[in-house]
Length: 258
Image (tube, rainbow, N blue to C red; front, side):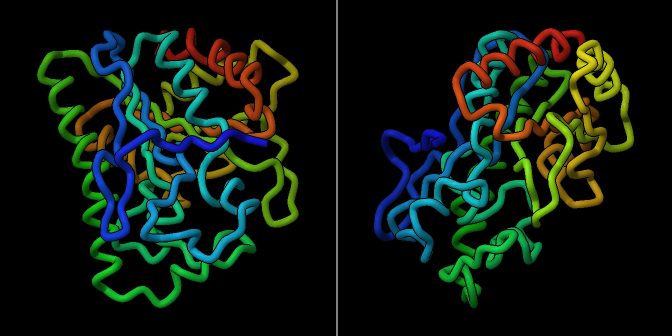
């Protein structure tokens, strides 16, 4: 079973959400790459209880991206790159969606209903946007601007994981590279990965910007002229420490080249 990424302190009270919802690791790393992991944690602040879900559901992919944070941490160490990751489950609010989008707060994830998210009043939605979305992305904005002012930032890479089967349909890819108008970075990474003929690489698979999964990169990279790349790794391959380290070691030289 995947290990929960639960913060050690400061993440919740019965009346509110205590900052930071964004955790910065290796902030003085000299790499021109910034790593982001929006779906790093399955933590629910106490005010939300379990959102009406059971333990197995809270450990599943509907709550977070299993393995993604540890891959990102390995990459941070290998590249000497800063990493910003979230400390709140996407069940509270999905940080990779426009906050005005209906699916920024899921009521149904694949086949699982999230009872406590149904019929939210406007005040609760506004609270989550302010305390989770604004807090996280405001922290990323400030960090990116400071790095750019020092000439230390060229690209932003977000790290995710995906399920081997979605809506009963198997997914053949071990890794997906998600990109928008500029495909050059993704193509360089693909070329490096393709040296292993056993790999099935998805280009804009299993998602693409058309699925509205590019929000974080649009906000923090594209509009600033930085190079964006979203990496999706199949989560059964990164459930263990060996798998996480192996994928990071495979990717690090290719991200360094980019």
